[in-house]
Amino acid sequence: MIIVMRSEATEEQVMAVDERLRALELASNISRGRERTVIGAIGDDRKVQTETLEAMAGVERVIRILKPYKIVAREWHRDDSVIQIGGVPLGGRTVQVIAGPCSVETPEQMDVSAAAVRAAGCRLMRGGAFKPRTSPYTFQGLGEKGLEYLVNAARQHGLPVVTELMDVRQLDTFMRYGVDVIQIGTRNMQNFDLLKEVGRVDRPVILKRGMAATISEWLMSAEYIAAGGNHKIIFCERGVRSFETAYRNMLDVTAVAVLKRETHLPVIIDPSHAGGKAWMVPSLARAAVAAGADGLLVEMHPCPNEAWCDADQALTPQELNTLMGELRGIAAVLGRDL
Ligand code: PEP
Ligand code: MN
Image (tube, rainbow, N blue to C red):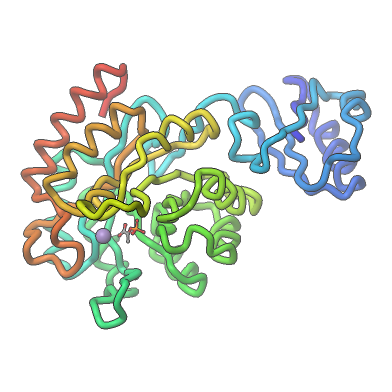
């Protein structure tokens, strides 16, 4: 249930509602917007009479949320949420492209990558230091050294960074290196303990869709993060498992339309892990922007055939540059910029 306070409600009135909810054994989550404060009551609210809360001073209205996910639901927050990432807005009018290599390899590779990401007009950089690999015998990522190379290269080019967290034990290290966005990969979408921990920090999170997760399960995973107090969540569709073998995963563009209706949070697409081949990436990326995605997560490597991970799907700097030009045109048709 959501309690919408009047625009002139005082802090005491907000606190009184908060106390009443606690007395009703409900957890509360106070969201202070520019216009008004909204309080989310979390827990079993079936026995609570909305009228008694509505009668409290400063309360404008009480809305019951029927969906199992609450904070992430559009019912809770009608307008699109814009998440600020080191001064770069994601979820607003501008479509943001996050680009960079699958994995961090060397300082030189990262420096050339960061320069290419910037030159193509992207405002955010990706790079994996802790890699979830199917085989334990393949390159697992550089670990903490990788974070250092990523952050150093990106900072030189004024780019906030996105990198994957696989283990709660690394969270402090991520915070210490100033990782701007924590990525939760497809394999960890339902690692609930990990979700709870990133829910406790004040850092944007990209939550990738589990490769066999329904949209409802995905929304519930986001709710785990939000319930801890971190509402800065970005959904990332990266393709789902299907019967088809001609590509790595099946990109579910429909998910963009459904999520934009169900949640106020930004939705981005990863065309690289969906297609799994560099030649498919432009087509999927164009479809994503046309469908209304708020951004893209794209793999690019200075020299794809030398990449230590996901070599087949990495764009060259030149291909990224060309793609950005095409996407700008599509965004403009939709009244957005890129
Ligand atoms: C990645 O972005 O590098 C990655 C491993 O993605 P996913 O979790 O979608 O496979
Ligand atoms: Mn990859």
